[in-house]
Length: 261
Image 1 (cartoon, rainbow, N blue to C red):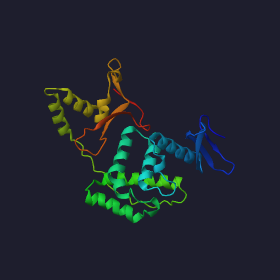
Image 2: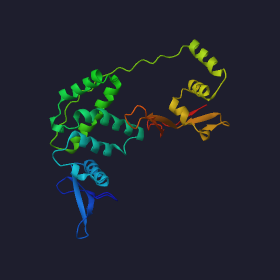
Image 3: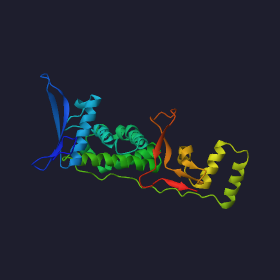
Image 4: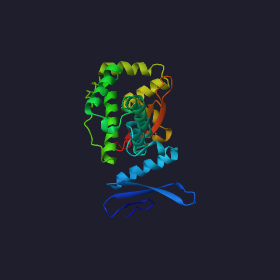
């Protein structure tokens, strides 16, 4: 039974079938394309990719059996677009464009090995001198792309991806004496910048949360304010001269809006 508004239904053979409009034939009749999956989710993801590629005008570039990893990366980005925040999407695109595609882009997925992923991680650390956290993030994205391929293509068996471990740096907390000295400095010749630092120090808010506060979030009558959004910054391209783009986002689902007295 298909879901309302979607041409996706379960076939008698147990597979899920998703239908999409490919265009109009010479006879003026609509032409449809079909995607199949072992689950509703698989079929839905495949048909979303096909629709997006048709919209972009490049369905021919994605052959059925000889797709390179670069092409699967593009598909994965399309599927992931509505699942993550815009700033996260920018980071995904940058990691794939700057690191994953230059190394793996021309390979067929079935030719990629665990040893190749280990060499890839080492090149990022030693060759490009990237931080361990950055390399970890990039390899996790590569692993997600390969999982997408394994889920949608029966001929591809998931491999173990070498994801380097990293230890988060210990955050140094200011001593009481250092806090007092900082507060005295901030209270001298107060300006907007100093007030923002003092506000963050006294409330525990992050910089992006302080910048996202609006007048309606503050209640002088109740003597409290609400922190529900935050700003984050991401570069749109790998050009260092380009200014980062700011994204206003809601707090994570696991962290509800907080009230502070």
